[in-house]
Amino acid sequence: MKKLFLFTILILSFVIQAKSQSVEDSLKEQIGEIKDRISGLDERLLTSESSLSKLTKIKLSGYIQAQYDNFENKLSAPSLYNYFSIRRARLKVTYEAAEGIKFVLQPDFAPGSLSLKDAYVVLNEQWIKSGILKKTFSLWAGKFNRPNYEVEYSSSQREVPERSLIIRTLYPGERAIGAKLEVTPESIPLKIQLAIFNGNDGGFTQYSDTTGKSTSNTIENKDYDNFKDYMARATYSFKLGSFGGLDIGAHAYFGSLKSSTNATLRSDYKTIDSSKVGNSVSRNWFGGEFQFFADVLGGMSLKGEYITGNNATLGGAKFANGNLLPNFQNKFAGYYVYLIKNVGRKNQFAFRYDFYDPNTSVSGSDVNVLKFTGDNTMKIGALKCTKADLAYTTYTLAWHYYFDDNIRITLAYSIVQNEKVGKNASGTSNLIETYTNPNGTPGTIDYSQIFRENQLTLRLQAKF
Image 1 (cartoon, rainbow, N blue to C red):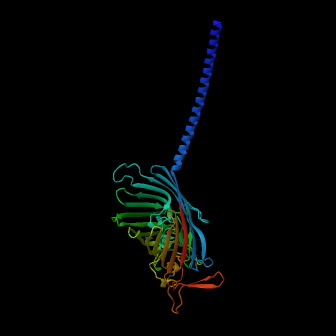
Image 2 (tube, one colour; image 1 turned 90 degrees about the horizontal axis):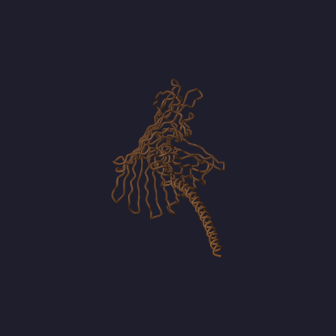
Image 3 (cartoon, rainbow, N blue to C red; image 1 turned 120 degrees about the vertical axis):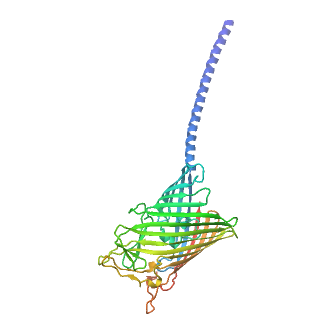
């Protein structure tokens, strides 16, 4: 009996040991599975964290401007006096690739005019660790705004619907393809911009027939000559204590067009300069600017810019006798002045006076009278002073209501006034143009008078 009991105990111990080993092996297997799952989860978390880290470097912003326009200029819009439109619909993507390196991409999705506005990279200097030059330099490359105050002032922030006439004329499209060096010392309120561009971005204007009628040619993403545009801008900021601040600055432009004929006519319609096809026709101008900000009565600002110099357009169109239309180089001047006043916390009033004279060498009385008769020796045809030489003054009044930080409603009215042309001996205007009304009846515009070219704009802007 005793032997049987010992044998039973021995058997039970073997069974218990085997069972314990089985449980231990099963437990080890389960722990191994858990470790594998945790390891896989770690890998997925690391992958997600890496992806999330990349996403946090991407910043999205943009705005949409939906508006209604009513035009009073029957000549430029004889059959369409008013319409709704999407003026701008932009999405800006900014990617911080690394410290000091930024990529920017901004298309405009406005219906019927999908275009690339910005596409550039910015490299900020990171190697100077101390001293006055620390974080002073940045290099831009790609397509971006030209260095000018109103050009660089975002359309989503500007206090009137469109830029001034002189800026729209000198910098069509605002942007250009090239490179820029910015100098912004941390310890000095100074900013210097030096840029070089292809020079043909946004299009240019050239004379296309004997009357001086002009056409625009859009050039994008390529250069067709070896001439480049050079620009420089410098601004300096003054603090006026608790009262406000003052920024002053200046910018310069040095550019050229490739001559398509053998002569260039000056803006007085008298002086002709010989040149060769392919030579440069210079376009140079200078501007001075200021922005005054005052923290009084809710806040107000006064700002403006004056620009003067020589612009140019290309000739090359052939006359019936084989003579060529000359290039044209015109002296110009223009300026704009803003007055902006906050009214309470949600309203703002803005006024802009905008003047542009595309040819300061002639007056309105010279239109259709003053004429270069041509030069058969140089094989250059005649060119007449036209309405393209007339100065324009625009008064723009705007009222903004800020629903919140992202939504703004704007009501603006622009009063456009033309320079008057002269009259002949019989008292008839030297320039009368005709148009046809929507009902088929004829109409006329007399340029010896100031005729209505005003425009009303109602805009709803949403930003994010």
